[in-house]
Image (cartoon, rainbow, N blue to C red; front, side):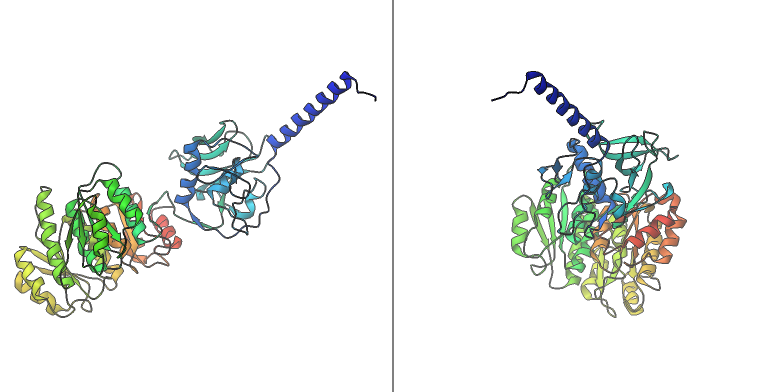
Length: 508
């Protein structure tokens, strides 16, 4: 049988090696064949985009055009993860999914199909810088925010072949090379406007309370926390002033189980004592027993909200004394019928350790009247207009503390919150890092109180669909002081349109 010569074998081997090298060069210059750009609509906010990008940066996920990782950085396949090159990194950061719900890794050529071109002045963290030019190479990265006031440099999150993996680095605008780069925005981004807003939110009310706690008490231990039922606004409202006096967070719990995120947060804080506000109808004994395994539990409850509020008020004053502070004699009167006028007071009540007491719409309960005397209240502030609290109620309170009962009210709940914000300024709170929450629900605004008390900052309320005009005017008037607005809750609470209006008011 004929055999090939050794020289022929060597020649073909050299030719194969050359072909492989040429193919490798082409792969380096041009991305792998694009996946179909048929994507499901996946909404994502800017904070989540940066958090996903940062995860790969923390792991320094290596650069590869032929390998895939999950968003958490675990090795994956094409159908379970994202490609580990520049455009795969952007796809992962934007959480792109195909029509079957699987991770979708687009290329520099197909990323424009899910994004919109913008201009430099519109750039926000989470947007993309992109070049589709073939020379010297194509590249995509996540814009992380401006590095300098002159906007000549920015933070770039990227999968970089030269850096051998995912990095975050200060980069000259538009990019290092002379290749043209242009800014783009993912079509389905729920805009956080991170230059102007500090978002504090979880998946739901309980999660938002945990996120607020983590932000407020990021380091060190906290001796005391307050827990209220997530369906019990009266318990949570009065608990906000107690949490402020105790210099701890206000957290929310499900009635029949201690959620893992709540348990973990209480343990992270290292709390020694937990006030549980309300009866077993709002937080049952099993939840308290679970907390009791790592902290002392003190439940505060009474047959009705008036009695519970009074007991919480006594504990509030006790916590003030325990922390070396003096009660200033202020208290707030809230109707027991609705939260809309009262939730705006949580920040100043928490900051000053002023009790919140409940009244009827047309009557002053005996237990509340007695508390005004026992607590030595010097000034009582009724929250809301006459439909929430009649003049007769304030008159009855005034008879207990002659000439020192006042009303804080505006035409709407949002105007009342603005009146309370002005009142808060007089009490020493600032517009710096002001808080914004929905006035439609109660949970975000109430848990915001102890967080804002630490600054201390005023609290504002808005409807969900759009920013309340007077609130926008107030933010604009105080823009030089505000800096960033802390926004509590999801986009279902404070919409992207409302957040954009905040950014505009701050000078976007």
